[in-house]
Length: 443
Ligand SMILES: [Zn+2]
Image 1 (cartoon, helix red, strand yellow):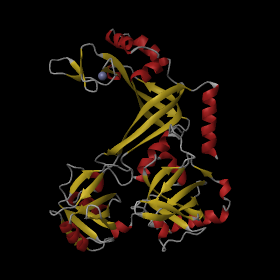
Image 2 (cartoon, protein in one colour):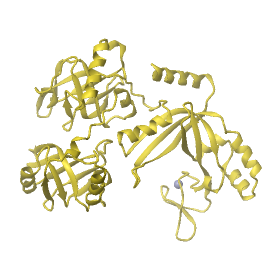
Image 3 (cartoon, helix red, strand yellow):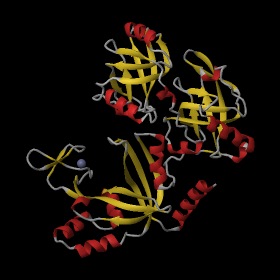
Image 4 (cartoon, helix red, strand yellow):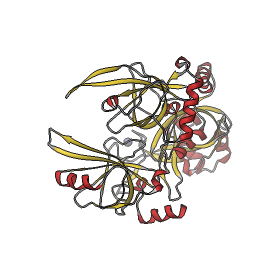
């Protein structure tokens, strides 16, 4: 099995590695979904596909134009396995978390080889997130989740350009004891194969996160959404059914509130682990956590030359001076700014490295970068130690953003954590914030 996937990796490009430049090797994929669409205004036909590779990654693909549509419509079918040669990769206008930043374009140069059905594709399960986890995602994100239907909702009418349509709001809940409204638009609201009854499982693939007027997170279906009455995993289905048997009262569950500032407290390790488990290779997550600074180093590497106007990093100009790209200005007197790496430990003993830049770092250390620069030049290490000691082994409330930006060659997730805000963990107000967030987590 391992050998096989090694071999696949060499011959074929994996979906996670695809980019505008990285699109020369063929891809080996299963067609998970196919949609023929006609744009009546433009008199254009399109086919949209969803492809999955042996790694479980998925990508949207499309083709257009009478010739291409006619040719490919005959060749590529749902559930078929194909090798695709000579395709193009285009960045998406609206990138999504789960199915990526790029789309494939199939054109008249594209060649397709049909392959026998391959079990490797069927072993992959969807990474259904618990409803609780949807708290981590912003409006517009595309995610997969599942739960049990607690309220079937009434069919309602909504108006579209091409007439009146039906929608319904279904309520689901799961073992995280959170509930969520899912708005089914057409065609899902009219899908007669789907069982929308109390106690039925509803698995949502490619649901789109929305927010209600009352600031509650919800899910919307789109043309790409797939709804099923099973997760495709026997044990997961069983757990959901058991949960429903034991927990009949929907009033015991909470909705997930949308918080404008996206602040919440989770332990650092859990946040990092989350990406790895869900195989999500590109996304940003802002969180709040209480953590203690374990180490801080003040050396040449903890400073950078910044623009006195905007604090952005300066680049060397042709005449050996400096210039600021955002300000489009030459800079004769660069300002020294901090870029610190903090080793922190949170209340669950998880350790992480946080990066803190510019004015926020100055606020933390309560000294100007110029002074630190001078101490460094004069080799006044004792003074530098004194500055560091003031913040070491003290608790702070950090608001920080975790950015996951891909995988390295060994499949290790690459990420950075940048601090947006830092406050001393004292004062009645902060205690109240922490208590509020802790209660939220502990229930
Ligand atoms: Zn500037």
